[in-house]
Length: 98
Image (cartoon, rainbow, N blue to C red):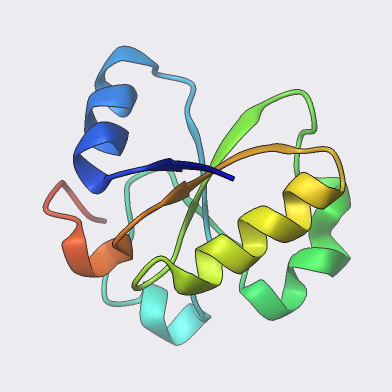
């Protein structure tokens, strides 16, 4: 599985304006703040929302610590999606939130 640190994700976002970020935390968790532009699809619903995820794009998976997003990345990678897990999750994120 491809992985990036939170710092690498920030740098990647600075150079790639069309970044797809999928936040797999629960809706209540996301209310505390998410990366601007991130789409919230809770891990438990991910398999039911595959039609909403563009298979032609690369997606950065995010959660609180990097664990659930790792599971989400594996699930999507097994189905042919190009995904990257953000290690450390939102606990390590010191960039902007919305």
